[in-house]
Length: 219
Ligand code: T5A
Image 1 (tube, helix red, strand yellow):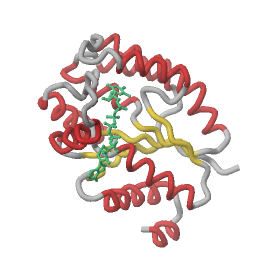
Image 2: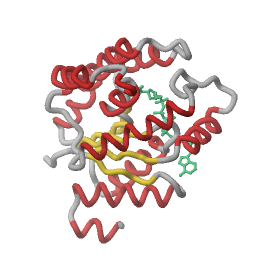
Image 3: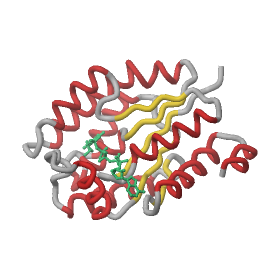
């Protein structure tokens, strides 16, 4: 049995995570690899129920510590029922957001102390850490405009409705985390067209996990 790999994709609102995960999945499957796509919050039956609870709060968001505990409760269910079972049978797991989102969104302005995330990671995530995290980097204004255009007339959730200062701080937060974790994180320039960004991502993934021949034939 081949070994699967755990990859998370992070970034602010509308940075193109879902679009790029779809492209990455196609390429990995074309390589003959077993791969699943999942997301946070959500990804499992219990995780999706907690996702609804968090996102339906709308602009009356829970306080940062409550949100953190809800995200980790959803994560625990997701890890137990989806991520670990997939990795155990050799599948690749591509996850739209993971722990870095909690540190950046709920930990911004030290709303929740870093030590709380460390303790929750030890309790919930344990050894199941992503081996590679792709941080899609985009000016907040562009990401919000993309998210807004896609949403149409539907109401923004509580996160998307935050101020531009909040979203700029998110971008900085993700870049700081990437800088602090250079072995795990690769920052991907998320400006440009979908094909160009997909190519940057493929290069990062294939350089990390696939053979040199594979990089040359696909990159
Ligand atoms: N959250 C999550 C926390 O606060 N703490 C946590 O611990 C976790 C896990 C989840 C919210 O929860 C918060 C963060 C989030 O606010 P969500 O609905 O899952 O909410 O939303 P997001 O993860 O932010 O995902 P989005 O759907 O907003 O954005 P994506 O997936 O980054 O972007 P995507 O691919 O849907 O693209 C957005 C639009 O842009 C277009 C697409 O077609 C689409 O219309 N697009 C491009 N346009 C031009 N050029 C390109 N290169 C483009 N790429 C995509």
